[in-house]
Image (tube, rainbow, N blue to C red; front, side, top):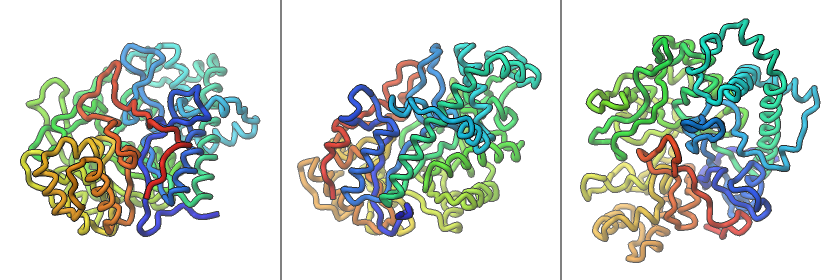
Length: 463
C-alpha cells in the first residue's frame, strides 16, 4: 500500500464533498462519501496526490427550523460526521452488536454526548440547548440518566448512523491511501454554540449564566482586513479556564486524526489575537490577545503525537506572532494568489504576487473557498492591474481572461511551494463561488451551495 503523505512538489484539489456530482447517483442532490470514491479516480488519473475537504461535521439547525441545517461547514457541531454525506446504499449497512460496542468504545469522548444531544434536539425541535429546560441545560446527572433510559431507540439510531458514516468514510480513506492521495481536513477555530461540545463543556466558553453570549467571534473592520467587518457569531473560548478549553481542542483533534492525513488550521492567528465582537455595536469591536505561543505549541505537540500533519492559515493582518511560531516549529503557512493585488489601491502585494519567491515550506493556492475564483478575479481586475500581476508573477499576460487565468494557475503550480492546491473551479475555469464572506443569512443562506457542473466521471484531464 502506498502511504498517503504529501511529497515534495505535490499537487492537489480543493473541493467540498457536498459539491461533487456523480452520474451514478442521479437521485442525490449533493455529494456523499460514496461520490468521493469516484472523485479519487479523477485525482489519480490526473497525477494528483492530495484532496482538501472542507469540515465534515454536522452543522447547526437553521433559525426557526427543527430539521433544516445551515449550509456553512464552519457552523458545525465540532465532532461527528454530517448525515448528509451518507449515500442511500451505505445507509443500508447495519452493525453487529460487537461492531457497535467497539465503535462506542473508540469514540467514547464524544459519541454518547452527541447522540444524547441529538435525541433532546429532536424532542425540543431545536439544537439551541439554552432553550431546553434547566435540568437538561445544566446537565443534571439524574435527569440525563432518566432521559437515556426513556429515549434508547433514538439514541441508538444516532450512534448507528455515525457508525455507518464512519464506515463509509473509512472506505474513502482506504482508497485514497491505496492511491497515494492524502486527504486534507480543515479544522475551524470556533464551533457553534448550538453544538453538543459547547453543551457538554460550557465552562470552556464565554457565556452568561442564562447562556447568552456577551461577545461573539468575528473580524473587526481594520485597514488590513480584506473582506471588511465580519460577524461569525460563535462563542469565544474562555481562556481563563484554559485546561477545559484545551480538553475540547484535543477531543476535536483526536477525531480529526482518525479522519485525515493532514489538516489545515483555519483562522490560526486567533491563538495569538482574535476579534471580540458585539454583533450590533461595531464601535465596540476589538482585537484581544489570545492564549499565545505556549498553548499553540501544546496543541501542535498533541497533533504530532497523533501522527497528523498540519499547516496553518496565516493570511491577513495581525499574524506576526503566528508566523514567528510557525517558522520556529517548521510548520507551513499558506499563500493565496488571490490576495496578490491590494484591495485599496493598484499596488501588488509582495507576499503573494511573487510566486517564484514562495517558500518551499508553504502551501500555495490560486484562490480559496472564501474568495472569487481565479477567472472571476481576472474578470474584475482592470487591464492595468492584470499587467502588473503578469510582470510580478512572471505569468504570460493575455487579454483573454480565461487564458490569463490559466497562465496564472501554471505560475502558481510552478512555484517552489511543497504543495499546491487548486480549487476545482480554477481547474475548470469557472466563476461559480462557494462562499461570499459577510453575506451569510440565518435563514435561506445561498452560500455553500456550489455544485460542480460536471459529473466526477466526466471531469476533464488537467496538467
